[in-house]
Length: 143
Image 1: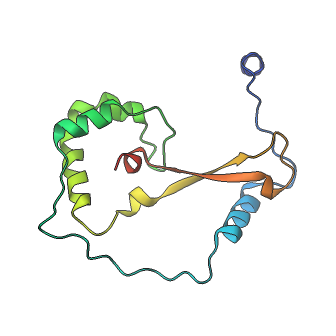
Image 2: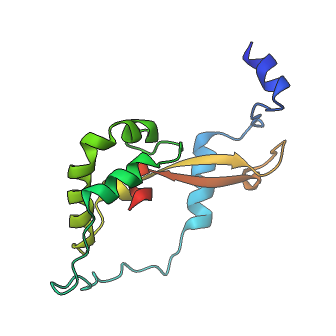
Image 3: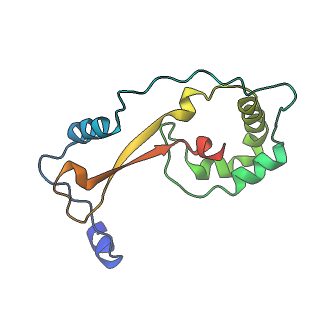
């Protein structure tokens, strides 16, 4: 049945050629993304008591209420869930976001991403025919 739906809506199923698997894609992305000259930057001293931005519950509610339906990140928290729970989530999330604005570091959970491979062409034949797309948590896209 789904094949018929895809055919009617002109959606084609992704066909991965032989020899292209998750490990090979991962190794390829790691190879092209590596920077041997990279050094970890020092922490910024950008948070000062004079400038302490905060976000109101009302503003957080509006942000959550207008979330677009997008892919979920590593936390598997869908946008529709946050949109539906906006009346309940707006106060704790407003406090969390305000706290994030006033600290010099971003939590690891907001920096993690799921890498999806998207073919550049209709019939990918080699590893370079795929584009890596990072899908972060919905909340990290809000902040």
